[in-house]
Length: 168
Image (cartoon, rainbow, N blue to C red; front, side):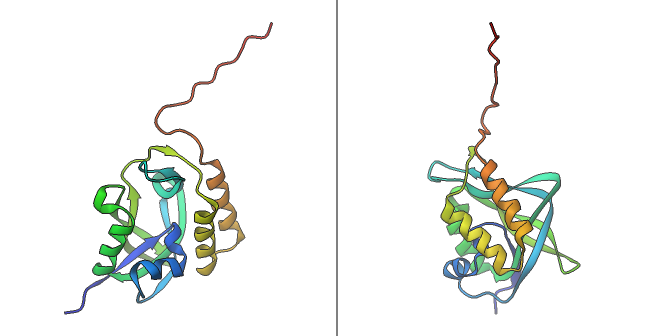
């Protein structure tokens, strides 16, 4: 019996088609999609991350652009390994995305915890922005992702406290 297919929502480096193909092989189909009610972040999720990795967090006015791919459970199991789901770095969740005027149930990955916000490496950011281009996104979305990546350097563990020195 063939494995049932489900939608996978990619918003990070798996947007780059060659990267995803190396990880899971060929998939049935893909198309651009938007996840509303979430926002894109870049963070370290465990000590093995040298730079920030893409993550999504709930946010009422948020919007994350990405793509949905129709893949099998066997392919999800391969992604579970690559995304660190088996060791608790990311976990798979169910979400609803919009694509071509329709709503789709999809699965995606979120970090189980963000240690701290961190900028992605240039190579990692390249995979994301090139993947967005491959799925038909324009410079407005690419610029948005680049802005978010540049802002990713604030600690999530403890709030910063700022003090002003009294002027003499």
